[in-house]
Length: 174
Ligand code: SF4
Ligand code: SF4
Image (tube, rainbow, N blue to C red; front, top):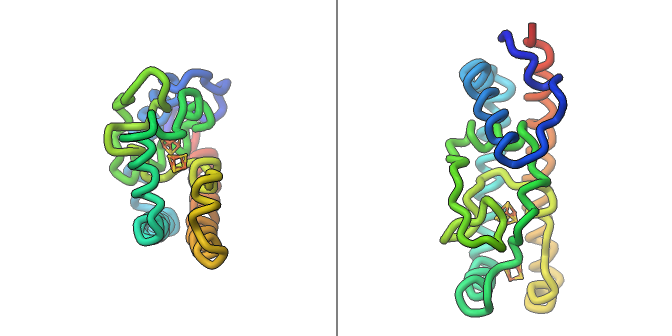
Protein backbone atom coordinates (compact mmCIF):
# COMPACT_ATOMS: atom_id res chain seq x y z
CA UNK A 1 0.00 0.00 0.00
CA UNK A 2 1.79 3.10 -1.17
CA UNK A 3 -0.46 6.10 -0.65
CA UNK A 4 -0.44 7.96 2.65
CA UNK A 5 -4.18 8.39 2.30
CA UNK A 6 -5.24 8.70 5.93
CA UNK A 7 -2.39 10.96 6.93
CA UNK A 8 -3.21 13.57 4.30
CA UNK A 9 -5.06 16.68 5.45
CA UNK A 10 -8.76 15.97 5.78
CA UNK A 11 -10.79 16.58 2.63
CA UNK A 12 -13.54 19.15 3.09
CA UNK A 13 -16.26 18.53 0.53
CA UNK A 14 -18.37 15.40 0.27
CA UNK A 15 -17.04 14.91 -3.26
CA UNK A 16 -13.44 14.89 -1.98
CA UNK A 17 -14.38 12.47 0.80
CA UNK A 18 -16.07 10.15 -1.69
CA UNK A 19 -12.99 10.29 -3.90
CA UNK A 20 -10.81 9.46 -0.90
CA UNK A 21 -13.09 6.51 -0.03
CA UNK A 22 -12.78 5.20 -3.59
CA UNK A 23 -8.98 5.56 -3.40
CA UNK A 24 -8.96 3.58 -0.16
CA UNK A 25 -11.13 0.91 -1.74
CA UNK A 26 -8.76 0.66 -4.68
CA UNK A 27 -5.58 0.48 -2.59
CA UNK A 28 -6.72 -1.73 0.27
CA UNK A 29 -10.33 -2.89 -0.30
CA UNK A 30 -9.50 -6.50 -1.14
CA UNK A 31 -6.97 -6.75 1.72
CA UNK A 32 -9.56 -5.44 4.16
CA UNK A 33 -12.18 -7.93 2.99
CA UNK A 34 -9.66 -10.79 3.30
CA UNK A 35 -8.72 -9.82 6.85
CA UNK A 36 -10.68 -12.30 9.07
CA UNK A 37 -11.39 -9.80 11.87
CA UNK A 38 -12.65 -7.08 9.51
CA UNK A 39 -14.56 -9.60 7.39
CA UNK A 40 -16.38 -10.88 10.51
CA UNK A 41 -17.16 -7.32 11.63
CA UNK A 42 -18.56 -6.41 8.21
CA UNK A 43 -20.86 -9.45 8.39
CA UNK A 44 -21.93 -8.58 11.93
CA UNK A 45 -22.59 -4.96 10.94
CA UNK A 46 -24.73 -6.06 8.01
CA UNK A 47 -26.79 -8.26 10.37
CA UNK A 48 -27.17 -5.44 12.92
CA UNK A 49 -28.27 -2.98 10.24
CA UNK A 50 -30.78 -5.49 8.90
CA UNK A 51 -32.09 -5.92 12.44
CA UNK A 52 -32.48 -2.14 12.92
CA UNK A 53 -34.15 -1.77 9.53
CA UNK A 54 -36.56 -4.61 10.34
CA UNK A 55 -37.47 -2.92 13.64
CA UNK A 56 -38.08 0.35 11.81
CA UNK A 57 -40.46 -1.41 9.43
CA UNK A 58 -42.24 -3.33 12.20
CA UNK A 59 -42.67 -0.25 14.41
CA UNK A 60 -44.01 1.88 11.56
CA UNK A 61 -41.01 4.24 11.39
CA UNK A 62 -40.39 3.57 7.71
CA UNK A 63 -44.06 4.28 6.91
CA UNK A 64 -43.94 7.58 8.85
CA UNK A 65 -40.78 8.69 7.05
CA UNK A 66 -42.31 7.74 3.70
CA UNK A 67 -45.35 9.82 4.59
CA UNK A 68 -43.10 12.84 5.34
CA UNK A 69 -41.30 12.41 2.04
CA UNK A 70 -44.40 11.94 -0.09
CA UNK A 71 -47.11 14.01 1.62
CA UNK A 72 -45.58 16.47 4.05
CA UNK A 73 -43.06 18.29 1.91
CA UNK A 74 -40.00 16.09 2.35
CA UNK A 75 -38.13 14.13 4.99
CA UNK A 76 -35.81 15.58 7.64
CA UNK A 77 -32.72 14.40 5.70
CA UNK A 78 -31.67 17.94 4.85
CA UNK A 79 -28.81 19.32 2.82
CA UNK A 80 -25.52 19.49 4.73
CA UNK A 81 -25.93 16.37 6.88
CA UNK A 82 -23.69 14.53 4.37
CA UNK A 83 -20.80 16.68 5.65
CA UNK A 84 -20.79 14.64 8.87
CA UNK A 85 -19.55 11.65 6.86
CA UNK A 86 -15.82 10.92 6.72
CA UNK A 87 -13.91 8.81 4.23
CA UNK A 88 -13.64 5.64 6.35
CA UNK A 89 -17.39 5.51 6.97
CA UNK A 90 -17.92 5.98 3.24
CA UNK A 91 -15.36 3.22 2.61
CA UNK A 92 -17.37 0.91 4.88
CA UNK A 93 -20.39 1.60 2.68
CA UNK A 94 -18.36 0.76 -0.42
CA UNK A 95 -17.21 -2.49 1.24
CA UNK A 96 -20.90 -3.27 1.86
CA UNK A 97 -21.61 -2.82 -1.85
CA UNK A 98 -23.14 0.66 -1.74
CA UNK A 99 -22.73 2.99 -4.72
CA UNK A 100 -21.81 6.53 -3.66
CA UNK A 101 -22.81 8.14 -6.94
CA UNK A 102 -25.05 11.15 -6.52
CA UNK A 103 -28.73 10.20 -6.24
CA UNK A 104 -29.71 13.38 -4.40
CA UNK A 105 -33.43 13.80 -4.82
CA UNK A 106 -33.56 17.60 -4.39
CA UNK A 107 -31.32 20.62 -3.80
CA UNK A 108 -32.55 20.85 -0.19
CA UNK A 109 -31.86 17.23 0.66
CA UNK A 110 -28.85 15.35 1.98
CA UNK A 111 -26.50 14.17 -0.77
CA UNK A 112 -27.32 10.54 0.15
CA UNK A 113 -31.11 10.84 0.07
CA UNK A 114 -32.44 9.01 -2.96
CA UNK A 115 -35.98 8.66 -4.24
CA UNK A 116 -36.62 5.71 -1.90
CA UNK A 117 -34.88 7.06 1.19
CA UNK A 118 -31.29 6.91 2.39
CA UNK A 119 -28.99 5.26 -0.14
CA UNK A 120 -26.33 4.36 2.45
CA UNK A 121 -26.18 1.10 4.38
CA UNK A 122 -23.85 2.16 7.21
CA UNK A 123 -25.12 5.50 8.50
CA UNK A 124 -23.61 8.12 10.81
CA UNK A 125 -24.50 8.00 14.51
CA UNK A 126 -26.59 11.18 14.06
CA UNK A 127 -28.74 9.49 11.43
CA UNK A 128 -29.09 6.17 13.28
CA UNK A 129 -29.95 7.76 16.63
CA UNK A 130 -32.32 10.45 15.37
CA UNK A 131 -35.90 10.06 16.54
CA UNK A 132 -38.05 13.07 15.67
CA UNK A 133 -40.82 14.51 17.85
CA UNK A 134 -43.49 12.84 15.74
CA UNK A 135 -41.94 9.40 16.26
CA UNK A 136 -41.35 10.06 19.95
CA UNK A 137 -45.09 10.70 20.31
CA UNK A 138 -46.13 7.78 18.12
CA UNK A 139 -43.98 5.06 19.69
CA UNK A 140 -44.55 3.58 23.13
CA UNK A 141 -41.74 3.57 25.69
CA UNK A 142 -41.17 -0.14 25.05
CA UNK A 143 -41.02 0.41 21.29
CA UNK A 144 -38.53 3.26 21.70
CA UNK A 145 -36.33 1.06 23.90
CA UNK A 146 -36.53 -1.78 21.35
CA UNK A 147 -35.50 0.58 18.56
CA UNK A 148 -32.69 2.15 20.58
CA UNK A 149 -31.38 -1.30 21.55
CA UNK A 150 -31.05 -2.34 17.88
CA UNK A 151 -29.52 1.02 16.98
CA UNK A 152 -27.06 0.73 19.88
CA UNK A 153 -25.86 -2.70 18.73
CA UNK A 154 -25.48 -1.37 15.18
CA UNK A 155 -23.47 1.65 16.33
CA UNK A 156 -21.25 -0.37 18.68
CA UNK A 157 -20.36 -2.72 15.83
CA UNK A 158 -19.85 0.18 13.42
CA UNK A 159 -17.49 1.88 15.88
CA UNK A 160 -15.38 -1.26 16.38
CA UNK A 161 -15.21 -1.85 12.60
CA UNK A 162 -14.39 1.81 11.92
CA UNK A 163 -11.49 1.71 14.40
CA UNK A 164 -10.26 -1.66 13.08
CA UNK A 165 -10.16 -0.33 9.51
CA UNK A 166 -8.33 2.85 10.51
CA UNK A 167 -5.79 0.80 12.46
CA UNK A 168 -5.34 -1.63 9.55
CA UNK A 169 -4.76 1.19 7.06
CA UNK A 170 -2.29 2.98 9.33
CA UNK A 171 -0.41 -0.25 10.03
CA UNK A 172 -0.13 -1.15 6.35
CA UNK A 173 0.67 2.29 4.94
CA UNK A 174 4.22 2.57 3.64
S1 SF4 B 1 -37.58 10.96 11.19
FE1 SF4 B 1 -39.51 11.99 11.62
S2 SF4 B 1 -39.40 13.97 10.54
FE2 SF4 B 1 -37.80 12.65 9.72
S3 SF4 B 1 -38.73 11.72 7.90
FE3 SF4 B 1 -39.01 10.28 9.64
S4 SF4 B 1 -41.03 10.77 10.48
FE4 SF4 B 1 -40.40 12.50 9.18
S1 SF4 C 1 -30.25 9.06 6.89
FE1 SF4 C 1 -29.11 9.06 4.95
S2 SF4 C 1 -30.19 10.52 3.65
FE2 SF4 C 1 -30.83 10.92 5.78
S3 SF4 C 1 -29.46 12.50 6.53
FE3 SF4 C 1 -28.57 10.52 7.09
S4 SF4 C 1 -27.17 10.04 5.38
FE4 SF4 C 1 -28.52 11.64 4.68
